[in-house]
Length: 501
Image (cartoon, rainbow, N blue to C red; front, side, top):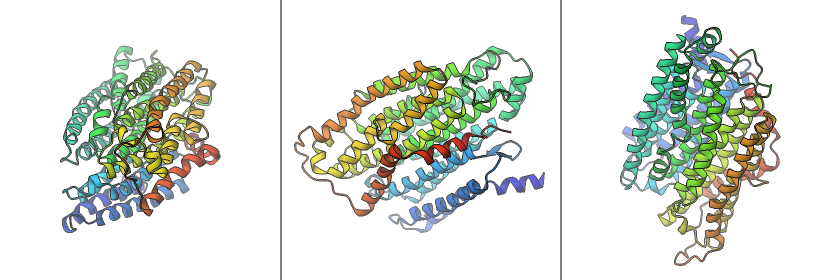
């Protein structure tokens, strides 16, 4: 047992590095001046060390490894999501260094970066959690950190409201998930997902109780990924939270939620005797078709998100509804539940990382100069700040899925997986929703290029570091739309042995 703990701890080095960084940031904040950026650079050092350990794991990764008695899985799938989350964390720290919303406040930023690292740690644990209690605890660590960060700028009118709503919705969905876990444990006598799978394959359980447990657990996952009808917190929290935290939640939190949900469903409810390479290979345990439930959630999520975004005047709130719609698109790949479908989800996440963070970065830069996130503030921006306007155009077209941007590639692989699985109606619904999304994205473009600037005549200039960071987010959106072979190969390799135990 002792040797097992030692061996397991060696494979938990990235998480250990994050926990150590969190403690160092708390201590450093006691001695560093309020306005110093030293804690931000310390956070970046901690993330770099974590990145080294993640790269080390990726280089040595062979067959999936289960550590701490099936509590946590270390495999190519979890490493893929760790890379996305870690990259998002590093970018958000750089965002934070340039955010007037944070830099002009009166609060110490050491605790802000400590909570950011704590949030990253919770997400890392979510990507590999293979035990129901571990899933719940990692979800709670992530949620508690994000509750505080959402209301970090207390001087903003809607910041405290956002945090309070986040806590209330989070508490309800968390309680529902825990109740579902308790029912599932009562039915199977197991808390690790491999034991749940084994019990469901070998014995009959009460079908109604299993359905109730599944729906309650889905509520917990749905809350984390902003899937309808568990999305109600998203618009208010995204609008009230600092732009940096909104951007982080829209990408990293969604990635962690999807990683945990995919692992739960593909292991707990997948028949190991059926290859996921086969089309339509979703295993139906106890007569309940889980893929139909997720298909309904997917259609509801993307449709509601797109329709609600049509009338938004605040760009941050518009991107919040857009984020809900994109969660619906990504659920399409989970519904297929083949290696092709899961690889499509991973491809989409990388693409989504660049285009969504890029859009939020520009919202932050404009808000720094104008003090507003309203779409009307973008009137005439195409003539006042061509670089910002052209970059925003590319990001928004990519979010729509217009070629030759990376967003087109992401949706192409999702729809291809659906067509191969004979789920053509879902692909049609997804394509129609993409057309709807074009309308509200074009509203922003119209304001930038086709409307008079009015009183807003001041150009928005960018510093060299801001231009470098913007181009670092913009270039992949263009390049991945043209040359995406390596990304596809990496995503496919990450799901090849996923779920093997």
